[in-house]
Length: 136
Image (cartoon, rainbow, N blue to C red; front, top):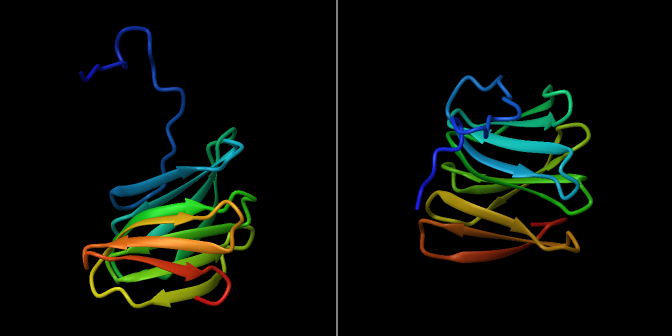
């Protein structure tokens, strides 16, 4: 069952604008105070929920970003995309920390373990890979 909640007293509570291409992935922090979003032009943005402002822009993927995740402590952003890579970013500075290569097709899913030591990825190459989040 699908319901359109925008009309019957269920308005959208906030709109975050700033991507120049379609948004393909989103993730809220554990606390719900920040949102990470990825787009079709390879750009990742980190937003403050209360103000609605983009605090960081991360550029590095070649092509679409299909997946984003945030470590439970909010310090690291993980992303995966069309360029067959998984990337980790410093969530405070936006600096690329690590690029993990090995998939032979686009990466559609990324998820960090609760302890932040491992990240897993799923790809159109029909594999799930586990990575050491600090060394790849």
